[in-house]
Amino acid sequence: MPRPSPLGTSCPECERLEAEFLDARTRLQHLRRLRRLTSIEEEALVDRVAMAIARAKEHASEHSKRDASPRESERGAGRARESREKEIAAG
Image 1 (tube, one colour):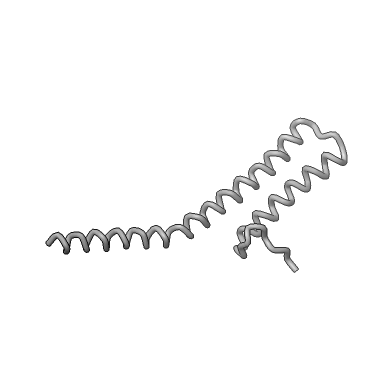
Image 2 (image 1 turned 120 degrees about the vertical axis):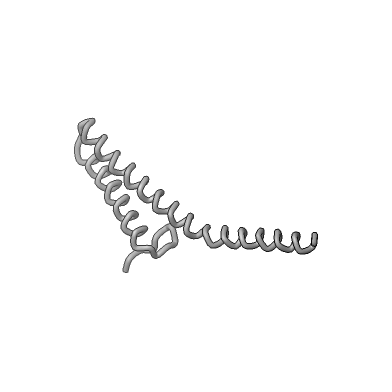
């Protein structure tokens, strides 16, 4: 059974990005324990972890934009309605 995402979403892309991050982090940790890494190796592994984090954050921001869009359009509709009501009241 797949473990629930800490983000609380069931988006397949979120799950894939989380797995990518966990894989990169685990690989870095295991190789550090196994042997002394060269600076080039360590830099490449750290970059892999950082890129996984960046991709996950970018995807999460896309979710935020999609989730905010309906609320913003409702606010815009409310403002337009208020404006029309003021125009009608002004005569």
